[in-house]
Length: 172
Image (cartoon, rainbow, N blue to C red; front, side, top):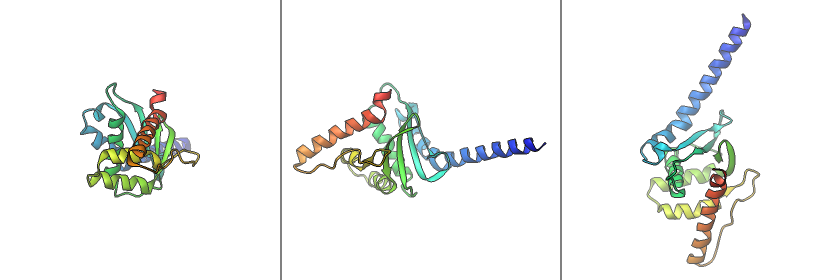
């Protein structure tokens, strides 16, 4: 008889974790993707790290429509950041099929959401995104470039393309 109570408790705990993740992490993503013609066909998920860590979010790509571009994926990320900008996170993980590829500080993610919400130029946000990323082991993923505007912009765009390649394109 005790095993029934244990099973019921485990099922209840699983449902509570799933519900918490849906309401606090996944639902804002679903709402922003539903408004986008490409996004509504994408399989992208947001959840708390390990399902229970409220201070970390995982932005996880599973499948993209054949016509999705890196700009589309970036727009999905920016729109999600804007939708949860009032929340505080320590870290945001950029994952593919559950495997973290990059990590961004919660402060940078919130700033990204604020800038998206206030109409910052998406090209500027895209160019400067890679330099805010770290690898899962904590090392900087990309350099911060200095110099003339044209040279810096070119290097940043190369990093932007490389970021998408390493995040999900190489594995698709």
